[in-house]
Image 1 (spheres, rainbow over the protein chains, first blue to last red):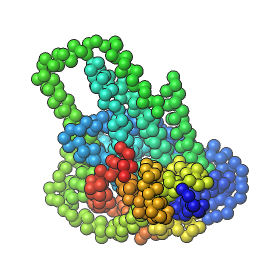
Image 2: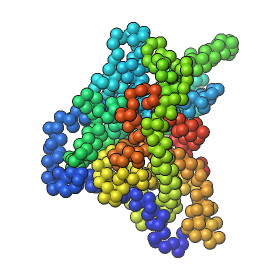
Image 3: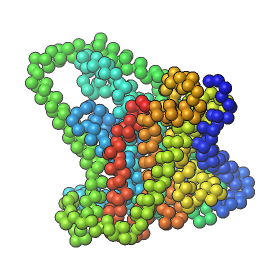
Length: 292
Length: 310
């Protein structure tokens, strides 16, 4: 590499770098600064120290959002770690028509969250498919308020998240399964290990790093959940906004009429630290387990 | 990575402790008919499971499709659920077109998504090329910035993002919807990894031939990573087409809505007829599903076995 002028690499980098700096680095720094001010979306704002963070501490809406978001993570992550792995094992074998099944299982991933939300609100509405079938089979007497009871709305959103995420993580697992050496599985088979044993003793240890990756991605995704709750409740997050998630509250506080940009920024910093903490925690947990 | 070594241990363990398997194997050799029966039994179970998951994943789409085609007199709820419309009609699709400017929204989405594809492919590969093939001071910092954009959740900066976009007079414009995602960290990193795998000899030959930096990038490097470019294109298109939160935050003028925001609006405001909502949903999702099934091998190549064979 001779005679290259120093600015040439920067000419290649400049457009992409400008976008990254202007729309990620600057807003991020700005969020951190705003979180210590009482700025509104209209502008202005003076430095108020840690007052926003102190206010978070005694803000019931904020804590409700955090609780709901944590519940979301606690339910969705185990499901999204386990179910797609089962699915990947199911579609791994090259039987007739498997390409078709793989593509079909992936199709919910392709649909936008809004489309998924509209489809699921029809499935789960009081006269929707799920309630009619349950009533027809005399499992329930009255329709279940999947979308109008806050707790049920939250669980319905979780079901939708899992439905939409299955195919994506299935593909991630397929890539991991492709790297499990056939010879190991065959050796285990010759030694008389049945499919269950082969799975637990050969496959599982090999896909463990992928499970950690999936757990991290699913946890971060759940921490940021918004569209599911928003679309299933037509924007209300349930009666009294009781099913609100952290992102829902950030948008409501920060971008409504006369939004409190400073206060919402403090919540945003909590969200950022939370997602960062989640990925660090999952990775830590895994390395410790490996060492043990 | 260490995990690659771990499974050897349990496998070896079996070899020494289990002696039953060989007898089992011998029995299987003696009775190939029963083995074959068991194999086909396993296959039947596999297909049953596949069909069950098929129903769960695609069932909701089909139910919505069927609802959208049902005539006004037909039951859309009740038990047993009526899966096939008895008098199929496209009436509700016409009604959607009458009440909501769906085509306009789709056009907006298409504009934004196409722009996003072009910028991500071009800017992403330019930046990726510089990071992968050039040595210069500040490279680590530049890489760090792109990685940081992948770590910072958009949701945590959306309030400031809105303020930045507004100060640049980009709110409530389609350009403003597009630009923040114009060169995602993922695109840059995918391209960087693809360019890294190119052998140095190709470039050296081009240098001897007197090709300039830009020519080497455009004529030699870029054509050799077509697979990754396709993956980046598909990802950017789907991401942009499906994005909901940023258009929702940045657009206020209804005529500028993208399809996701417009369709959500349809269910909230325009109609109480589930058939019409279903028709709107189908109009939003069917083109994308068709595109997906046509291009699905790129999806699986992109996410799965290394996007970067070139």
